[in-house]
Every structure is written in C-alpha cells, then in structure tokens.
Length: 298
Image (cartoon, rainbow, N blue to C red; front, side, top):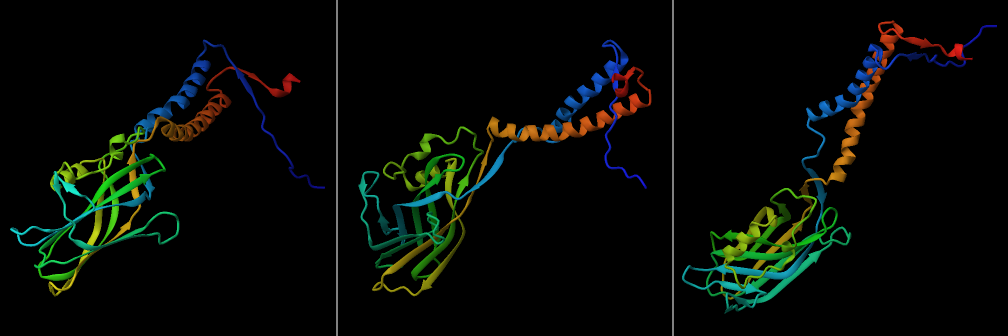
C-alpha cells in the first residue's frame, strides 16, 4: 500500500555561541537592523506624523432671523432698508419692508435644516439699482470640535435694468481660513455679531477675518424685468446648506494610531528578511557555532 504524507513539522536547530563572539555580534546587528530600519524608511517617505487631516461634516446650520437688506436707488437718494436691527451707530433704522417670509426646510428629514428660503416685499417710488443682503447664521460643529460659530452670508448684485423681482440661488458653505489644532476654536467665535458699533464694511471685514466664515458659492441670479411703482418689489433668496470639509492637525493620540501601523508593517517585512538571512548564514556554516540538535536532547 502506498504511503502518503499526512503531517510535517520543521526541525529546530539551536545555535549557541559566546557573547563576545563574531556570531553574537552578527545576530545582534540583524536584530538592531530590523528594529531601527523602519524608522529611517518611514522618516524618508513622508514621516510618521500626520501634518493635517480632513473630516467631512455637515454643520447644524440655523438662520438667526437677523438680516439686513439694502436696496440702493440713485446715489443721492436714501436706500430702501429692511432689517431686524433697530439701530445703526446710534441712528434708528426704519424698516421699509411690508412683508418678510423666512422658511427653513429639512428635505431629507434627518433633523438638520437643508434649505433657507428668504423673501422680502417692499414698495419704492424709483427703480432699484443694486442690492446688498446680509443674512446671519449659526453653524454648529459636533464631530471633531464642539462649538457654535455665528457668521454672515453676504449677497450683492448690480441691476442693469429696471426689475420688479430678483431671485438669488446659491450654496451656503462654512469656509475655513486656516488649519485647526486639537485645541479647537476660541470662545470668541461664539459671541453674537451686532451692527451697532460697526459700518457695513467693517462688519464684513471682521467676519471675513475669522477662522470660519460663511460663504455663498455657485450663485446665480434671476431677474424679472418691468418695474412699476404701484406693484410690490420682491427679493427672494434660496440657499442650500452644504457639507463642510474641516482641515485639522491631529492630536498625539490620533497620530499614535497611525504610527504603530506604519512601523509594524515595515518591521515585519525586515524581520522576515533578517531571519532568512541568518538561517542561510548558519545553515551554510558561514557563521560557525555550536549546534544543538533536538533529537540529542532526548
């Protein structure tokens, strides 16, 4: 009857030598080479630490129900003003709008608002030449940094013809100006923005210089031509809240999760190579030492 192999096991030889011998130094060299080489390899191919990382988060956006609309006519005529603010630099603001409609819509029913619809109605005895609209929002970040940032979305448009209705469309994003650290945001970003002590230009510049600032992208405007002073002028804005990419510097604990994976992957390869080099050197007697055979110990 033919015999078949049903099991096999390797023979483990033990190689013994004195500590002060060349054999010991050769083994020590390969061990240190396996331990230290990953450090040099990884440091020369990008390094261990993550310089920055990206996280996609959709902030919890909410409209503050604060706005300022300026509809400019001729340069020597006061603009039409619609605002929730009562004073501006100690001057009382007269609200010229007869109707304001604000609606936030949760399209996918996930508990977060997705679209803002803003609409202002007013009358004027002259056609408007340009529009400025400031909308105030709260952006709440939760995944990486728990903070609330108030910022201003700014819309402006110059009209080339007399119109009765203007409709703005755009995407509302939270624009990041610099890399965040693990310490998070300063508390100063949580304070409310007021227009009482600033001009419009100063207010927009202050908002722009923040680490986070609202920005409207993919903007386009539709106009309905044909102005008559008997009919109401309608200004509409529809903004879609978009996801935000947060660029941040990882903390030391997050870096450690990445460092050990890099080191271990290089170490296992180098340790495998070093082991087989030593097996070759000892089995071919390039390194002479005392060999302990397993069957002689029985």
